[in-house]
Image 1 (tube, rainbow, N blue to C red):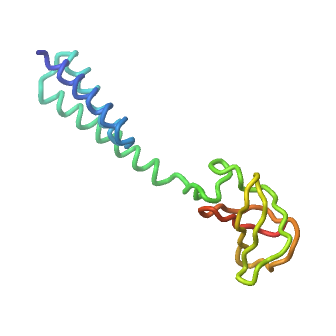
Image 2 (image 1 turned 90 degrees about the horizontal axis):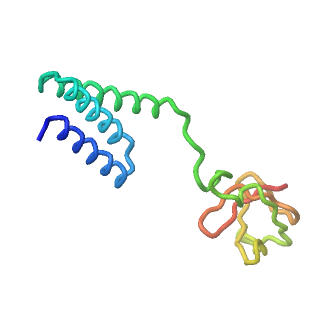
Length: 141
């Protein structure tokens, strides 16, 4: 079996492992293995193939790490409108309970509503700010 075939099989195995685990770093290592395969096709020595694969794979992992570190943190899923379409919707609260919760009818079901800290409990329209389990955290609209 030729050296390039071994490199391609290793690269394919790394891609499969990445698909199973979901880590982008394995994909960068697979790119390094592809670089090793290309070096093998070019006819360079085995040590140069290993060095090429190691340098390209390490550079890819390093670049991925730097990119992820400098990217701003995403909003939590509980309050992210892109993840949860209930965020920003309006609900009508008729009365608040003593414990700071209320029951509202929303999307055809009964929901427990809680006020976000800093809001006074008052009846009326409220806007959903966050979904915590089966409870809606709301602000005064």
